Image (tube, rainbow over all chains, first blue to last red; front, side, top):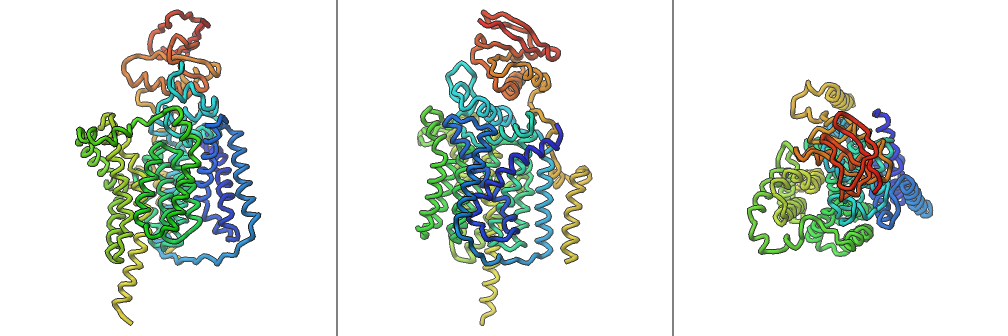
Length: 465
Length: 137
């Protein structure tokens, strides 16, 4: 099949998602200049994808087949709802956004981000996904959903048909992939890589938009270039698994939660709801990670009770949106292959402490290896310590705390697991740490900006009046 | 302004050159132009004739129930053939009990009919790969 058909399929899928995302953002963006709207394209695509497939997955649980007709109707209804709300409200006037100066380093780094993003997309057109999970599990589930609905013969054990593996996994990624492949006109697996690359580029664009008002370009774009140019990001973008979308949505959830708590940005709170809802519906491990990251954020921002209530309302809303699948899964007794009873049993864990040590070594290596993530995690930790010391405010240690909790969570999950540890770490070790790395990566520009501002203030104080 | 334009043009030029001929660049940045396999088919661990399985998918009536016969060794081959069949053959499904199947995908192994079944016809897809229709019980 031609690259043109792949491109057309990507446009046919992402065009409506982008339109839905913009419609849902329209209330917040109304009255803004066209250039500002354009800068929200990454945010809009991710919001559109989150909203459309969260709704489609809930409908699938209720018996609706997630085919093209359902996709078109859901897109139309969401776009009408978002657009209608924006039109019904009075137009707002906004002060023009401050235009930051672009130093040569900012221009070079921003162009670098554009070039690396373009390479990522171009490479995807010639990459069948590396992971066998994609064609052995994620995509067939989506195709079965589209053709048969949530057919209990293949989505539940015990029938006369062989069921899928990982029956407890949510439906978001499978549903999106089946439509993606359907829109290319035939079963071309390169469409999976193209869609994953589109989502990665959208996530970086969204991060740039969300961080833009708070970080100067000379620190923002080099920071994002470090994230986008990480070798492991490129490997995973050609893997096709659900881990990267999950990581992107979780990291953006944390960023939006921080912007809401730190700056009172209401749009960020709404985005936290959308991104959290998507993270819950991509993989089973999305729920515990969303909760532990939210718990860390709560501890750090404990004094801001009012805003924390808003954040927890967003988390509760995300769980409510995932409720149809969670209830269906609970009703049919589908459990994850990591047993919570084992993972919480002190005697079970005490008998196998060697697993914890092995997992800590392997996952720790993934977090700090420069060959994988270009030292994003050590850089974020160093910057956070420096800012916390300069400002004498321990709240700036939130990024290392999030990294530590994400790291500890996966050590614990591997410790309480019964599967062969070497196999588990070899097959999934590099993928499970991605949310933690991306959270650290998105914190780097914010921390660098704060460090630069603190240093400037310190020098000004030193000069005296 | 000229410095910024020159820098942007330089970065764009390096990116274009990297895409066009990655071999000329050092390994630490060559990965930016790397890709897996330019094929619409799954990348399997064991070599699987995916084209033969695509042909089988075109023959199999939608909604059929099938079983897969593949060599017991190497283990990976059987697993990969089964997974590729699951992908290409949907909305047809694999029977948990082979005797319930109406079709057999025979891949690299002699045909063994499940007990109590009778063959109606065989579609030869490739040397040693065939789709076999069974008579209804």
